[in-house]
Length: 84
Image (cartoon, rainbow, N blue to C red):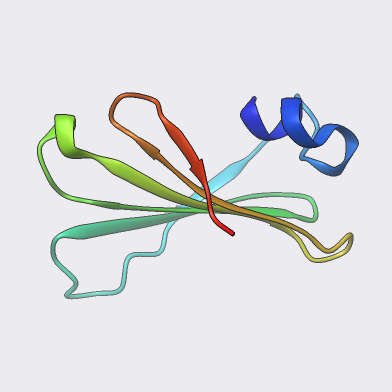
C-alpha cells in the first residue's frame, strides 16, 4: 500500500495474485528469504530469525519490463525506510 500510494501507476497494481516460494539457501540459519511473483513483478523479502519486536523485513520490489525498482525495509513497529 505504501509503494502504491507513493508511486501510483509505477507500482504494482492492487489485486495482483502473487505466487510465493521460499528461496532461503540450504544450510543458512538465522534468516529467511521469500520471493513473490505476479506477472512481470517480483518482490523479495528477507528477514532475520529474531524476536518479533526486533524484526526488520528487507524488501525489494521489481518490474524488469518497466525498470521500476523499490528497495526498503519495514521494522516491527511498521516504520518504513526507503533505501537510496
